[in-house]
Amino acid sequence: MTTTNEGTKGQPPRPLVVSRGFAAPRALVFRAWTSAEHIRRWFCPAGYTVPQAEVQFRVGGIFNICMRSPEGVEHWTKGEFTEIVPDVRLVIDMHAIGQRDRPLFRAHTVVSFADEPGGTRLEVTQSYSLFDTSAEPMIQGAPQGWRQTLDRLVEEVARIKAAEPIQRGVVHASFRIERNYEAAPARVFKALSDPVAKAKWFSGGDGYVLLARAMDVRPGGREHEQGRWPNGVVSTFDAVYHDVVPDERIIYSYEMHLDERKISVSLATFELKAQGAGTRLVMTEQGAFLDGYDDAGSRERGSNFLLDALGASLRN
Image 1 (cartoon, rainbow, N blue to C red):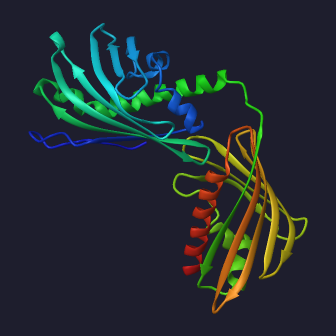
Image 2: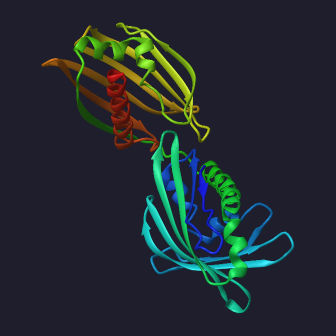
Image 3: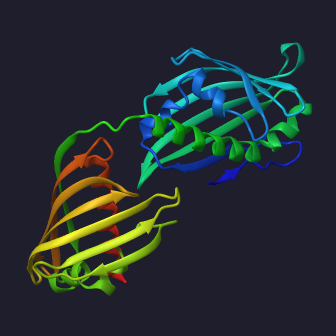
């Protein structure tokens, strides 16, 4: 998670940015924002409750929340949805309200939802307009308040996820990616087949913690990698190699798991062709994506990330 909004005294507060990873699909995390039933369970800091909430989930619909402190003091936020892009983006124009319905400050709130390995990355950006200087401490406390609020959102998302039956189904899809590298085919092949060379680029990036790795690139050989993502999800890659032609071709099938759940079974082919002093690489993947938990689009984005990392390793 990241949070920023410290400003200089006497100057307008800087925007606040909060992010959090969730071990759930975007559609499920998005749903937790769409009804008063969900909002009452999580939209408040630790120790607070939401005795009243009215949510009209449409552009122009109201977003009115009453948060009650442990001492019994009620704090109202009243606003409306100004933009809704399902599973991608929400914009809510919020106003903190004081006694006699006096506006204290405005919080223009943008919520974005993006895929990340193992789940969803949510980011909240709030820009403030201060109407009453007595409300400055409320804005200064927003980072801590949002951290605690998103802790509760994690719990609500987990509750929704546990209550949903698994929707069984298979989506078949394929994609093709091409790359040109300024390295000979033998060097690119080594980056794909040598355990030390592959470890330089075949990983999850920032926040990913490697738990296990083994690799034996030959027909009938296997590869295994397991790692933990920042949102706590453990992903497992298990592959079997079917065809290996040095400096020319590698074909393997593999399964992907998130925690104990199998999300896909795929066939991947890497073809290498000399192109001048360099190499043209063509990756083709055919996948069976299981039970709505993965799709070819997110897998293709992840593969592009990895092939970019492969290219960077070849330049070092």
